[in-house]
Length: 106
Image (tube, rainbow, N blue to C red):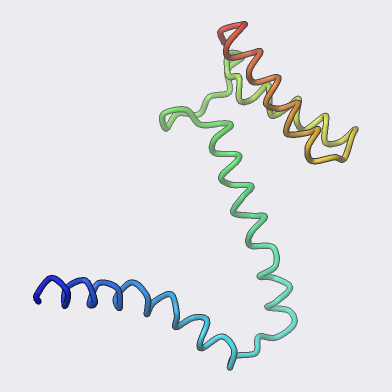
């Protein structure tokens, strides 16, 4: 019986913090300027995650020529400027990374 009570309590502790923001958000109206500012949050967070994975290796800034992530991101960036197609950009980035990492052993 104690195990079932413990599992139910853990489910409640996990579920309630996830439910409350959605339940309370329907009553709250943000100003238009705040909504516009918050629309930039996902792309800002994604940009930081990508930049960190490109430029940092083991907590150290890796701006050396042997960084395959740096070169493949440059290839993907140039492809995105030319093609403007997401699939082609991702494919070129993956292909260039594979060539640099596994065949040229950078």
